[in-house]
Amino acid sequence: MDCLIKDALVVDGTGAPPRAADIGVAGDRIVALEPGLGAFARRVVDARGLVAAPGLIDIHTHSDMSLLLDGRAQSKVSQGVTTDVTGNCGFSPFPIDPARLELHQDLMAGIGDDPQALEWTDLEGYRRAAERRGLAMNAAPLVGHGALRIAVMGVSTAEPDAPQLQALCALLERMLDQGAFGMTTGLTYVPSRYAPTSELLALCRVLQRRGRLYATHARDRDPTGADHKLGPLNEALHLGRETGVRVQYSHAAINTPSDWGTAGRWTRHFDGAVAEGLDAGFDVYPYDASSSALTQYLPPWVVEGGVAAMRARLQDEATLRRAEADLLQGWSAQRIPWLWDRFVLARTDGLLGTVEGQTLEQAAAAAGVSPGRLVLLLCREGGNGVMVVLFYRTEADMLTFLTHPHCVMGSDGSALCFDQGSRRPHPRNFGASVRVLGRFVRERGDLDLATAVAKMSGRVAERLRLTDRGRIAVGQAADLVLFDPDEVADRATYLRPAQQAVGVRHVWVNGVRVLEDGELNGARPGRVLRAA
Image 1: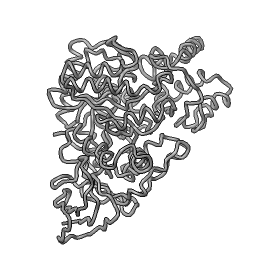
Image 2 (image 1 turned 120 degrees about the vertical axis):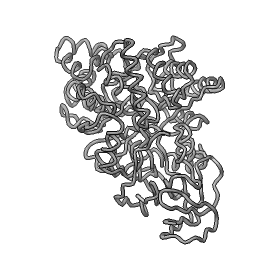
Image 3 (image 1 turned 45 degrees about the vertical axis):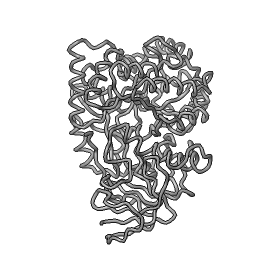
Image 4 (image 1 turned 135 degrees about the vertical axis):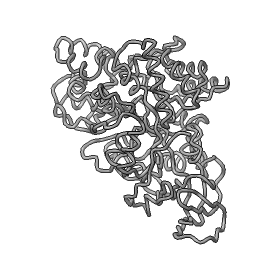
Protein backbone atom coordinates (compact mmCIF):
# COMPACT_ATOMS: atom_id res chain seq x y z
CA MET A 1 0.00 0.00 0.00
CA ASP A 2 1.10 3.56 -0.67
CA CYS A 3 -0.54 4.90 2.49
CA LEU A 4 -2.01 3.43 5.65
CA ILE A 5 -4.23 5.64 7.81
CA LYS A 6 -4.15 4.13 11.31
CA ASP A 7 -6.69 4.29 14.14
CA ALA A 8 -9.19 6.67 12.52
CA LEU A 9 -12.79 7.18 13.54
CA VAL A 10 -14.36 6.42 10.17
CA VAL A 11 -17.51 8.27 9.14
CA ASP A 12 -18.05 6.57 5.82
CA GLY A 13 -20.47 8.92 4.05
CA THR A 14 -23.49 6.63 4.12
CA GLY A 15 -24.97 8.01 7.35
CA ALA A 16 -23.90 4.90 9.29
CA PRO A 17 -22.55 5.44 12.83
CA PRO A 18 -18.81 6.17 13.17
CA ARG A 19 -16.53 3.16 13.68
CA ALA A 20 -12.85 2.65 14.37
CA ALA A 21 -10.83 1.36 11.42
CA ASP A 22 -7.63 1.65 9.43
CA ILE A 23 -7.72 2.70 5.76
CA GLY A 24 -5.31 1.38 3.15
CA VAL A 25 -4.68 3.24 -0.09
CA ALA A 26 -2.88 2.02 -3.21
CA GLY A 27 -2.66 4.27 -6.24
CA ASP A 28 -5.89 6.26 -6.45
CA ARG A 29 -8.10 3.68 -4.70
CA ILE A 30 -9.04 2.53 -1.22
CA VAL A 31 -7.86 -1.10 -1.00
CA ALA A 32 -8.42 -1.98 2.66
CA LEU A 33 -10.79 -0.92 5.45
CA GLU A 34 -10.77 -2.75 8.76
CA PRO A 35 -9.46 -2.37 12.31
CA GLY A 36 -5.89 -3.38 13.14
CA LEU A 37 -4.45 -3.56 9.65
CA GLY A 38 -0.85 -4.71 9.96
CA ALA A 39 -0.04 -4.38 6.29
CA PHE A 40 3.13 -2.76 5.03
CA ALA A 41 2.74 0.74 3.59
CA ARG A 42 5.16 3.28 2.20
CA ARG A 43 3.67 5.87 4.50
CA VAL A 44 1.71 5.57 7.73
CA VAL A 45 -0.49 8.39 9.04
CA ASP A 46 -1.47 8.36 12.72
CA ALA A 47 -5.16 9.32 12.83
CA ARG A 48 -5.79 8.86 16.54
CA GLY A 49 -8.36 11.43 17.70
CA LEU A 50 -9.27 12.32 14.11
CA VAL A 51 -12.32 11.62 11.98
CA ALA A 52 -11.77 10.10 8.54
CA ALA A 53 -14.48 11.06 6.07
CA PRO A 54 -14.86 10.78 2.32
CA GLY A 55 -13.57 13.80 0.48
CA LEU A 56 -16.48 16.23 0.57
CA ILE A 57 -18.46 16.82 -2.64
CA ASP A 58 -19.90 20.33 -3.02
CA ILE A 59 -23.03 19.92 -5.13
CA HIS A 60 -23.47 23.59 -6.00
CA THR A 61 -20.42 25.64 -6.98
CA HIS A 62 -19.23 28.17 -9.52
CA SER A 63 -15.60 27.06 -9.73
CA ASP A 64 -15.68 26.65 -13.52
CA MET A 65 -13.25 29.51 -14.19
CA SER A 66 -11.66 30.01 -10.77
CA LEU A 67 -10.09 26.56 -11.02
CA LEU A 68 -8.45 27.63 -14.27
CA LEU A 69 -7.30 30.92 -12.77
CA ASP A 70 -5.74 29.21 -9.75
CA GLY A 71 -5.83 25.44 -9.67
CA ARG A 72 -4.62 25.31 -6.06
CA ALA A 73 -8.27 25.56 -4.97
CA GLN A 74 -7.11 26.79 -1.57
CA SER A 75 -10.50 27.77 -0.16
CA LYS A 76 -12.00 24.34 -0.87
CA VAL A 77 -9.14 21.89 -0.28
CA SER A 78 -8.51 23.47 3.12
CA GLN A 79 -12.08 22.51 4.09
CA GLY A 80 -11.75 18.91 2.95
CA VAL A 81 -13.69 19.43 -0.29
CA THR A 82 -12.23 17.19 -2.99
CA THR A 83 -14.88 17.58 -5.74
CA ASP A 84 -16.75 20.70 -6.84
CA VAL A 85 -19.86 20.28 -8.95
CA THR A 86 -19.60 23.09 -11.50
CA GLY A 87 -21.80 24.68 -14.17
CA ASN A 88 -24.60 25.70 -11.83
CA CYS A 89 -27.31 28.35 -12.29
CA GLY A 90 -27.05 28.09 -16.08
CA PHE A 91 -23.41 29.28 -16.13
CA SER A 92 -20.88 27.02 -17.79
CA PRO A 93 -17.85 27.78 -19.99
CA PHE A 94 -19.07 25.34 -22.62
CA PRO A 95 -20.47 24.91 -25.17
CA ILE A 96 -19.03 27.97 -26.90
CA ASP A 97 -20.03 29.43 -30.25
CA PRO A 98 -16.92 31.36 -31.35
CA ALA A 99 -19.13 33.77 -33.29
CA ARG A 100 -20.80 34.76 -29.99
CA LEU A 101 -17.69 34.78 -27.82
CA GLU A 102 -18.41 38.15 -26.22
CA LEU A 103 -21.83 36.97 -25.09
CA HIS A 104 -20.31 33.84 -23.55
CA GLN A 105 -17.74 35.98 -21.73
CA ASP A 106 -20.48 38.26 -20.42
CA LEU A 107 -22.31 35.21 -19.11
CA MET A 108 -19.26 33.90 -17.25
CA ALA A 109 -18.59 37.34 -15.74
CA GLY A 110 -21.77 36.78 -13.75
CA ILE A 111 -20.02 34.33 -11.41
CA GLY A 112 -17.52 36.95 -10.31
CA ASP A 113 -14.14 35.83 -11.68
CA ASP A 114 -11.57 37.82 -13.61
CA PRO A 115 -12.13 37.46 -17.36
CA GLN A 116 -10.28 34.70 -19.18
CA ALA A 117 -9.95 33.70 -22.78
CA LEU A 118 -12.36 30.91 -23.67
CA GLU A 119 -10.02 28.90 -25.86
CA TRP A 120 -12.24 25.86 -26.39
CA THR A 121 -15.70 25.14 -27.74
CA ASP A 122 -16.89 22.12 -25.78
CA LEU A 123 -16.52 20.14 -22.56
CA GLU A 124 -13.64 18.06 -23.92
CA GLY A 125 -11.70 21.21 -24.72
CA TYR A 126 -12.43 22.66 -21.29
CA ARG A 127 -11.35 19.37 -19.65
CA ARG A 128 -8.03 19.39 -21.52
CA ALA A 129 -7.37 23.02 -20.62
CA ALA A 130 -8.15 22.50 -16.94
CA GLU A 131 -6.10 19.34 -16.52
CA ARG A 132 -3.20 20.83 -18.48
CA ARG A 133 -3.06 23.75 -16.04
CA GLY A 134 -3.35 21.40 -13.07
CA LEU A 135 -6.05 21.05 -10.41
CA ALA A 136 -5.70 20.35 -6.71
CA MET A 137 -9.27 19.00 -6.64
CA ASN A 138 -11.78 17.33 -8.93
CA ALA A 139 -14.57 18.99 -10.86
CA ALA A 140 -17.83 17.27 -11.80
CA PRO A 141 -19.21 19.44 -14.62
CA LEU A 142 -22.82 20.23 -15.40
CA VAL A 143 -23.70 22.09 -18.59
CA GLY A 144 -25.36 25.47 -18.16
CA HIS A 145 -28.58 26.22 -20.01
CA GLY A 146 -27.42 29.83 -20.42
CA ALA A 147 -24.40 28.68 -22.39
CA LEU A 148 -26.53 26.32 -24.50
CA ARG A 149 -28.98 29.09 -25.34
CA ILE A 150 -26.26 31.58 -26.26
CA ALA A 151 -24.59 29.02 -28.50
CA VAL A 152 -27.85 28.41 -30.38
CA MET A 153 -29.83 31.65 -30.04
CA GLY A 154 -27.62 34.39 -28.61
CA VAL A 155 -29.52 36.39 -26.00
CA SER A 156 -32.82 36.36 -27.84
CA THR A 157 -35.94 36.78 -25.72
CA ALA A 158 -37.94 34.68 -28.17
CA GLU A 159 -39.11 31.13 -27.76
CA PRO A 160 -37.01 28.76 -29.85
CA ASP A 161 -38.55 27.68 -33.12
CA ALA A 162 -38.55 24.00 -34.05
CA PRO A 163 -35.03 23.97 -35.61
CA GLN A 164 -33.59 25.92 -32.68
CA LEU A 165 -35.18 23.60 -30.13
CA GLN A 166 -33.78 20.63 -32.02
CA ALA A 167 -30.35 22.30 -32.01
CA LEU A 168 -30.56 22.93 -28.24
CA CYS A 169 -31.39 19.29 -27.58
CA ALA A 170 -28.65 18.05 -29.92
CA LEU A 171 -26.05 20.30 -28.28
CA LEU A 172 -27.12 19.09 -24.85
CA GLU A 173 -26.75 15.49 -26.05
CA ARG A 174 -23.23 16.26 -27.22
CA MET A 175 -22.22 17.68 -23.84
CA LEU A 176 -23.70 14.63 -22.10
CA ASP A 177 -21.71 12.41 -24.49
CA GLN A 178 -18.60 14.25 -23.29
CA GLY A 179 -19.36 13.44 -19.66
CA ALA A 180 -21.53 16.26 -18.28
CA PHE A 181 -23.44 15.06 -15.22
CA GLY A 182 -26.55 16.98 -16.17
CA MET A 183 -27.88 20.42 -17.05
CA THR A 184 -28.62 23.48 -14.93
CA THR A 185 -30.85 26.48 -15.40
CA GLY A 186 -30.53 30.01 -14.05
CA LEU A 187 -34.07 31.19 -14.59
CA THR A 188 -33.55 34.68 -13.18
CA TYR A 189 -30.45 35.29 -15.32
CA VAL A 190 -30.12 36.39 -18.94
CA PRO A 191 -30.57 34.43 -21.18
CA SER A 192 -31.84 31.39 -19.27
CA ARG A 193 -34.73 33.45 -17.95
CA TYR A 194 -36.18 33.72 -21.45
CA ALA A 195 -36.84 29.98 -21.76
CA PRO A 196 -40.51 28.97 -21.75
CA THR A 197 -41.49 25.88 -19.81
CA SER A 198 -41.98 24.04 -23.11
CA GLU A 199 -38.27 24.49 -23.90
CA LEU A 200 -37.28 23.14 -20.49
CA LEU A 201 -39.58 20.15 -20.93
CA ALA A 202 -37.81 19.21 -24.17
CA LEU A 203 -34.37 19.48 -22.57
CA CYS A 204 -35.47 17.57 -19.47
CA ARG A 205 -36.68 14.72 -21.66
CA VAL A 206 -33.15 14.44 -23.03
CA LEU A 207 -31.77 14.39 -19.50
CA GLN A 208 -34.28 11.78 -18.36
CA ARG A 209 -33.48 9.49 -21.27
CA ARG A 210 -29.77 9.76 -20.45
CA GLY A 211 -30.26 9.36 -16.70
CA ARG A 212 -28.70 12.74 -15.93
CA LEU A 213 -29.63 15.44 -13.40
CA TYR A 214 -31.66 18.60 -13.88
CA ALA A 215 -30.51 21.26 -11.38
CA THR A 216 -32.34 24.55 -11.29
CA HIS A 217 -31.88 28.04 -9.97
CA ALA A 218 -35.59 28.62 -10.29
CA ARG A 219 -37.62 31.57 -11.49
CA ASP A 220 -38.85 34.35 -9.24
CA ARG A 221 -42.40 33.78 -10.48
CA ASP A 222 -44.73 30.85 -11.12
CA PRO A 223 -45.36 30.17 -14.82
CA THR A 224 -47.81 27.41 -13.81
CA GLY A 225 -50.04 29.93 -12.03
CA ALA A 226 -50.43 27.70 -8.98
CA ASP A 227 -49.07 29.70 -6.03
CA HIS A 228 -46.89 32.80 -6.14
CA LYS A 229 -45.13 31.94 -2.87
CA LEU A 230 -44.21 28.42 -3.96
CA GLY A 231 -44.08 29.29 -7.64
CA PRO A 232 -40.38 28.70 -8.36
CA LEU A 233 -40.67 25.28 -6.76
CA ASN A 234 -43.85 24.45 -8.67
CA GLU A 235 -42.23 24.70 -12.09
CA ALA A 236 -39.31 22.48 -11.05
CA LEU A 237 -41.68 19.83 -9.71
CA HIS A 238 -43.85 20.12 -12.82
CA LEU A 239 -40.83 19.30 -14.99
CA GLY A 240 -40.13 16.25 -12.86
CA ARG A 241 -43.73 15.04 -13.05
CA GLU A 242 -44.02 15.53 -16.81
CA THR A 243 -40.68 14.05 -17.86
CA GLY A 244 -39.51 11.81 -15.00
CA VAL A 245 -36.20 13.72 -14.86
CA ARG A 246 -34.29 13.74 -11.58
CA VAL A 247 -34.68 17.25 -10.12
CA GLN A 248 -32.22 19.10 -7.90
CA TYR A 249 -33.61 22.40 -6.60
CA SER A 250 -30.71 24.78 -6.03
CA HIS A 251 -30.02 26.84 -2.88
CA ALA A 252 -33.46 26.75 -1.27
CA ALA A 253 -34.23 30.03 0.49
CA ILE A 254 -36.93 32.39 1.74
CA ASN A 255 -35.84 35.86 0.55
CA THR A 256 -38.97 37.96 1.04
CA PRO A 257 -38.96 39.53 4.53
CA SER A 258 -42.74 39.15 4.91
CA ASP A 259 -42.35 35.39 4.28
CA TRP A 260 -39.50 34.73 6.71
CA GLY A 261 -40.35 31.76 8.89
CA THR A 262 -42.26 29.84 6.20
CA ALA A 263 -39.56 27.31 5.23
CA GLY A 264 -41.64 24.55 6.85
CA ARG A 265 -44.46 25.20 4.40
CA TRP A 266 -41.95 24.95 1.53
CA THR A 267 -40.53 21.62 2.73
CA ARG A 268 -43.99 20.12 3.28
CA HIS A 269 -44.87 20.99 -0.32
CA PHE A 270 -41.62 19.34 -1.43
CA ASP A 271 -42.35 16.25 0.68
CA GLY A 272 -45.69 15.88 -1.04
CA ALA A 273 -44.05 15.76 -4.46
CA VAL A 274 -41.50 13.16 -3.34
CA ALA A 275 -44.32 11.10 -1.83
CA GLU A 276 -45.91 11.05 -5.30
CA GLY A 277 -42.79 9.35 -6.60
CA LEU A 278 -40.66 12.25 -7.90
CA ASP A 279 -36.89 11.75 -7.70
CA ALA A 280 -36.19 15.18 -6.26
CA GLY A 281 -33.78 16.77 -3.83
CA PHE A 282 -32.60 20.23 -2.90
CA ASP A 283 -29.58 21.96 -1.43
CA VAL A 284 -28.83 24.90 0.83
CA TYR A 285 -25.78 26.74 2.09
CA PRO A 286 -25.39 27.38 5.83
CA TYR A 287 -25.65 31.19 5.93
CA ASP A 288 -28.34 33.83 6.26
CA ALA A 289 -27.01 35.89 3.34
CA SER A 290 -26.72 35.25 -0.40
CA SER A 291 -24.47 36.65 -3.12
CA SER A 292 -24.70 37.22 -6.86
CA ALA A 293 -24.20 39.71 -9.66
CA LEU A 294 -25.97 43.02 -9.07
CA THR A 295 -27.47 42.88 -12.59
CA GLN A 296 -29.74 40.05 -11.44
CA TYR A 297 -31.81 42.58 -9.46
CA LEU A 298 -32.51 45.01 -12.31
CA PRO A 299 -35.91 45.23 -14.02
CA PRO A 300 -36.01 42.65 -16.82
CA TRP A 301 -36.36 45.20 -19.62
CA VAL A 302 -33.15 46.91 -18.53
CA VAL A 303 -30.99 43.80 -19.06
CA GLU A 304 -32.83 42.56 -22.17
CA GLY A 305 -30.40 41.72 -24.97
CA GLY A 306 -27.32 41.32 -22.78
CA VAL A 307 -24.68 43.57 -21.23
CA ALA A 308 -23.86 45.63 -24.33
CA ALA A 309 -27.53 46.41 -24.92
CA MET A 310 -27.99 47.32 -21.24
CA ARG A 311 -25.02 49.69 -21.33
CA ALA A 312 -26.27 51.42 -24.46
CA ARG A 313 -29.78 51.70 -22.99
CA LEU A 314 -28.58 53.28 -19.75
CA GLN A 315 -26.57 55.99 -21.50
CA ASP A 316 -29.81 57.91 -21.97
CA GLU A 317 -30.82 60.06 -19.00
CA ALA A 318 -34.56 59.66 -19.55
CA THR A 319 -34.13 55.88 -19.65
CA LEU A 320 -32.04 56.03 -16.47
CA ARG A 321 -34.83 57.89 -14.68
CA ARG A 322 -37.43 55.41 -15.94
CA ALA A 323 -35.25 52.48 -14.89
CA GLU A 324 -34.74 53.91 -11.41
CA ALA A 325 -38.47 54.46 -10.94
CA ASP A 326 -39.14 50.86 -11.98
CA LEU A 327 -36.30 49.49 -9.85
CA LEU A 328 -37.64 51.25 -6.75
CA GLN A 329 -40.83 49.19 -7.00
CA GLY A 330 -38.77 46.25 -5.67
CA TRP A 331 -36.54 43.51 -7.04
CA SER A 332 -37.60 40.18 -8.57
CA ALA A 333 -41.11 39.40 -9.74
CA GLN A 334 -42.09 39.36 -6.05
CA ARG A 335 -41.23 43.10 -5.81
CA ILE A 336 -39.09 42.49 -2.74
CA PRO A 337 -38.36 45.86 -1.10
CA TRP A 338 -34.87 47.33 -1.48
CA LEU A 339 -33.29 47.49 1.95
CA TRP A 340 -30.17 49.41 1.00
CA ASP A 341 -28.36 48.64 4.24
CA ARG A 342 -28.74 44.88 3.55
CA PHE A 343 -26.87 44.99 0.21
CA VAL A 344 -23.08 44.88 0.69
CA LEU A 345 -20.66 45.48 -2.17
CA ALA A 346 -18.46 42.40 -2.59
CA ARG A 347 -16.67 43.30 -5.83
CA THR A 348 -16.70 46.62 -7.69
CA ASP A 349 -12.98 47.03 -8.45
CA GLY A 350 -13.30 50.67 -7.37
CA LEU A 351 -15.92 51.67 -9.92
CA LEU A 352 -17.42 55.13 -9.23
CA GLY A 353 -15.21 55.41 -6.13
CA THR A 354 -16.99 52.59 -4.33
CA VAL A 355 -15.25 50.43 -1.75
CA GLU A 356 -15.83 46.72 -1.19
CA GLY A 357 -17.54 46.21 2.17
CA GLN A 358 -19.75 49.30 1.87
CA THR A 359 -23.51 48.90 1.88
CA LEU A 360 -25.37 50.40 -1.04
CA GLU A 361 -26.69 52.97 1.41
CA GLN A 362 -23.15 53.97 2.44
CA ALA A 363 -21.74 53.92 -1.08
CA ALA A 364 -24.59 56.05 -2.45
CA ALA A 365 -24.13 58.64 0.29
CA ALA A 366 -20.40 58.80 -0.41
CA ALA A 367 -21.05 59.20 -4.15
CA GLY A 368 -23.75 61.81 -3.66
CA VAL A 369 -26.40 59.92 -5.63
CA SER A 370 -29.48 57.93 -4.73
CA PRO A 371 -28.98 54.22 -4.04
CA GLY A 372 -31.17 53.28 -7.00
CA ARG A 373 -29.16 55.47 -9.35
CA LEU A 374 -25.93 53.99 -8.00
CA VAL A 375 -27.18 50.46 -8.71
CA LEU A 376 -27.86 51.36 -12.32
CA LEU A 377 -24.57 53.18 -12.81
CA LEU A 378 -22.55 50.32 -11.30
CA CYS A 379 -24.29 47.83 -13.60
CA ARG A 380 -23.79 50.09 -16.60
CA GLU A 381 -20.08 50.47 -15.93
CA GLY A 382 -19.29 47.03 -14.52
CA GLY A 383 -21.76 44.75 -16.28
CA ASN A 384 -22.17 41.32 -14.72
CA GLY A 385 -18.88 41.68 -12.82
CA VAL A 386 -20.29 43.77 -9.96
CA MET A 387 -21.03 41.38 -7.09
CA VAL A 388 -23.06 41.95 -3.93
CA VAL A 389 -23.90 40.10 -0.71
CA LEU A 390 -27.55 40.30 0.40
CA PHE A 391 -28.73 39.84 3.99
CA TYR A 392 -32.27 38.74 3.10
CA ARG A 393 -32.58 35.39 4.90
CA THR A 394 -32.85 33.97 8.40
CA GLU A 395 -30.79 31.25 10.03
CA ALA A 396 -33.98 29.59 11.29
CA ASP A 397 -35.29 29.10 7.74
CA MET A 398 -31.88 27.90 6.60
CA LEU A 399 -31.81 25.28 9.39
CA THR A 400 -35.25 24.04 8.40
CA PHE A 401 -33.80 23.31 4.98
CA LEU A 402 -30.40 22.01 6.12
CA THR A 403 -31.81 19.45 8.54
CA HIS A 404 -34.44 18.16 6.11
CA PRO A 405 -33.98 14.56 4.88
CA HIS A 406 -34.09 15.52 1.19
CA CYS A 407 -31.50 18.29 1.55
CA VAL A 408 -27.76 18.17 0.90
CA MET A 409 -25.28 20.98 1.46
CA GLY A 410 -23.93 23.05 -1.42
CA SER A 411 -21.86 26.18 -0.88
CA ASP A 412 -22.87 28.21 -3.97
CA GLY A 413 -19.23 29.32 -3.75
CA SER A 414 -16.04 28.87 -5.72
CA ALA A 415 -12.56 27.45 -5.27
CA LEU A 416 -10.55 30.61 -4.56
CA CYS A 417 -7.09 31.57 -3.41
CA PHE A 418 -6.66 33.25 -0.03
CA ASP A 419 -5.23 36.43 -1.56
CA GLN A 420 -8.37 38.35 -2.48
CA GLY A 421 -6.98 41.85 -2.12
CA SER A 422 -9.75 44.31 -1.29
CA ARG A 423 -12.54 42.07 -2.55
CA ARG A 424 -15.06 40.73 -0.05
CA PRO A 425 -16.45 37.50 -1.55
CA HIS A 426 -19.09 35.68 0.47
CA PRO A 427 -17.55 33.63 3.32
CA ARG A 428 -19.29 30.54 1.91
CA ASN A 429 -16.32 30.24 -0.46
CA PHE A 430 -13.98 29.62 2.47
CA GLY A 431 -16.08 28.04 5.18
CA ALA A 432 -19.39 26.45 4.20
CA SER A 433 -18.43 22.80 4.75
CA VAL A 434 -16.55 23.26 7.99
CA ARG A 435 -19.26 25.62 9.24
CA VAL A 436 -21.66 22.70 9.10
CA LEU A 437 -19.23 20.48 11.04
CA GLY A 438 -18.31 23.12 13.59
CA ARG A 439 -21.36 25.27 14.21
CA PHE A 440 -24.27 22.99 13.33
CA VAL A 441 -22.84 19.65 14.47
CA ARG A 442 -20.51 20.29 17.40
CA GLU A 443 -21.76 23.60 18.81
CA ARG A 444 -25.52 23.51 18.22
CA GLY A 445 -26.25 19.82 17.67
CA ASP A 446 -28.67 20.49 14.81
CA LEU A 447 -27.18 17.52 12.94
CA ASP A 448 -25.26 14.47 14.10
CA LEU A 449 -21.81 13.95 12.61
CA ALA A 450 -22.67 10.97 10.40
CA THR A 451 -25.69 12.71 8.88
CA ALA A 452 -23.78 15.93 8.26
CA VAL A 453 -20.93 14.13 6.51
CA ALA A 454 -23.41 12.14 4.39
CA LYS A 455 -25.10 15.40 3.31
CA MET A 456 -21.73 16.55 2.01
CA SER A 457 -20.47 13.31 0.48
CA GLY A 458 -22.41 10.07 -0.03
CA ARG A 459 -25.83 11.61 -0.58
CA VAL A 460 -24.39 14.12 -3.02
CA ALA A 461 -22.73 11.28 -4.95
CA GLU A 462 -26.11 9.53 -5.08
CA ARG A 463 -27.78 12.63 -6.55
CA LEU A 464 -25.09 12.79 -9.25
CA ARG A 465 -24.88 9.03 -9.74
CA LEU A 466 -21.19 9.42 -9.07
CA THR A 467 -20.62 5.81 -8.13
CA ASP A 468 -16.94 5.71 -7.15
CA ARG A 469 -16.79 8.68 -4.75
CA GLY A 470 -18.58 9.94 -1.66
CA ARG A 471 -18.02 6.83 0.49
CA ILE A 472 -15.16 5.22 2.34
CA ALA A 473 -15.24 1.65 1.04
CA VAL A 474 -12.88 -0.73 -0.69
CA GLY A 475 -12.74 0.08 -4.40
CA GLN A 476 -13.78 3.71 -3.98
CA ALA A 477 -11.57 6.56 -5.16
CA ALA A 478 -9.12 7.63 -2.48
CA ASP A 479 -10.61 11.09 -1.90
CA LEU A 480 -10.28 11.40 1.88
CA VAL A 481 -10.21 13.98 4.65
CA LEU A 482 -8.96 13.74 8.25
CA PHE A 483 -10.24 16.38 10.67
CA ASP A 484 -10.33 17.04 14.38
CA PRO A 485 -14.02 16.95 15.41
CA ASP A 486 -13.28 19.08 18.49
CA GLU A 487 -11.55 21.82 16.53
CA VAL A 488 -12.94 21.95 12.99
CA ALA A 489 -14.52 25.35 12.33
CA ASP A 490 -14.83 28.15 9.82
CA ARG A 491 -13.09 31.48 10.40
CA ALA A 492 -14.37 33.34 7.33
CA THR A 493 -16.50 36.40 8.12
CA TYR A 494 -18.30 38.87 5.88
CA LEU A 495 -15.67 41.54 6.56
CA ARG A 496 -12.71 39.13 6.51
CA PRO A 497 -13.81 36.22 4.33
CA ALA A 498 -10.50 34.91 2.95
CA GLN A 499 -9.43 32.99 6.04
CA GLN A 500 -8.46 29.34 6.18
CA ALA A 501 -10.63 26.94 8.14
CA VAL A 502 -9.17 25.24 11.20
CA GLY A 503 -9.20 21.62 12.28
CA VAL A 504 -8.74 19.98 8.85
CA ARG A 505 -5.43 18.10 9.07
CA HIS A 506 -5.02 16.00 5.92
CA VAL A 507 -6.73 15.78 2.54
CA TRP A 508 -6.15 13.27 -0.28
CA VAL A 509 -7.41 13.67 -3.86
CA ASN A 510 -7.15 10.58 -6.06
CA GLY A 511 -4.76 9.04 -3.55
CA VAL A 512 -2.39 12.04 -3.47
CA ARG A 513 -2.13 14.18 -0.35
CA VAL A 514 -2.86 17.84 -1.11
CA LEU A 515 -3.15 19.09 2.50
CA GLU A 516 -0.61 17.83 5.01
CA ASP A 517 -0.72 18.74 8.70
CA GLY A 518 -3.00 21.64 7.81
CA GLU A 519 -0.69 23.01 5.11
CA LEU A 520 -1.39 23.04 1.37
CA ASN A 521 1.50 21.40 -0.46
CA GLY A 522 0.89 22.43 -4.08
CA ALA A 523 0.07 18.96 -5.43
CA ARG A 524 -2.42 18.93 -8.32
CA PRO A 525 -3.85 15.44 -8.81
CA GLY A 526 -7.39 16.60 -9.60
CA ARG A 527 -9.44 15.65 -12.65
CA VAL A 528 -12.45 16.88 -14.58
CA LEU A 529 -14.64 13.83 -13.97
CA ARG A 530 -16.90 12.11 -16.49
CA ALA A 531 -20.43 10.92 -15.90
CA ALA A 532 -20.79 7.21 -16.47
